[in-house]
Image (cartoon, rainbow, N blue to C red; front, side, top):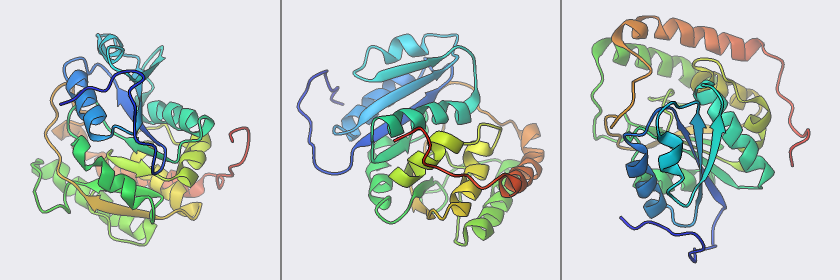
Length: 252
């Protein structure tokens, strides 16, 4: 793969794209992921949000021509993404792409998500609609299917992978989430879709292949998956009863 260097000439056509990469103790995988992203999206910029890591995640990221923001303590994916959305809104990016630092997301497929923001405000990369298959244990898989059915009803469309973290966001979604992105557990995946629909944004999927994670620790064990669907339902309810988000405040 080809690494981009600072000051290298880049294509300028198309939307301004910012890749936001939440990273928590991902020293084992982040170099590989950044190399892939810079190779796949040479016209894009990258913001790594080091979410309170205690390993060398931030130091490794700084070896690459990317921006690095550091949280003093772990705030979760929701908090990391809100930091990314606020930066993207302040810098007038047209599209934000969320790519995890653990190696699951295949960066060469990001362009399909970016292209989908021409007709969607949130384009979700679905590992279950690409036809390539993805290994997941029975308990977690059942929970994910139940949540996907619930979220399909919420967004008035068919979703198969509503908790996927591989997503692209249009400018209206970026500005909404810069002010209102949920930071609670499942808020960044489930509740964010509720808020998007309540704000009139369009949600859909693009089929992608995903790998198993390269490093770090998974956020869910088999035991925690048992209560996953219940927490997702609670997140949907929370999103429905919150005051309707209003944008247009201090951000441009």
